[in-house]
Image (cartoon, rainbow, N blue to C red; front, side, top):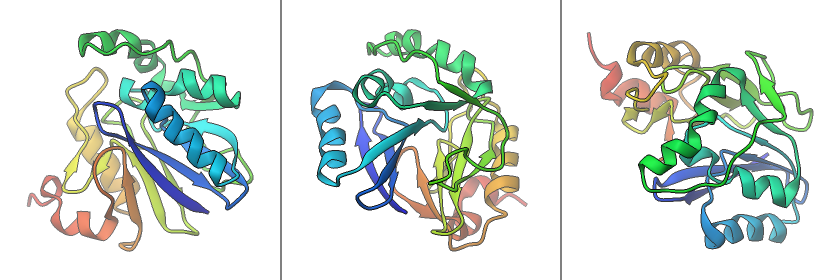
Length: 213
């Protein structure tokens, strides 16, 4: 599988595409706002001759679901979200207004995920790990074959996701990272929801949130 990232919207959110060359494509956290960002996403998919088969979200904060309405209209594929993100999704539009940002109604996912071990898409054998703390239903998606993690806003280079939003909890988030991500080998790449990529080994050694005695 290949992986490619876009940075979208005023929050500089990372949208990830996981795909087989000239084959099936998975969109993760579509945050595209406005025609220019929407076109960039569509153009890449068209130029690479990809077929979108599903949209999966690591969580449902507004910057990660801003492109849901567009993706739904454009590709008409199943949408996947963890069931504990329902209240977060329902607040997305009103949260946007607090920031002076209006997004289209994202609607509801077609499939509410639980704590399943593997994403139910045979062409994308990605492990799901439940990683609450940033939001109540945050998940990470892991490719053990290609050795990368799409971490949403759970883990960043040198930082962690904010925990001051409804449903967030710092101790829960730190425990999620330790139990679900730091148990991976050091050579796994971490593709985060904001900022640059990092590595599991790097974060184990240098992330200040995990260096306390």
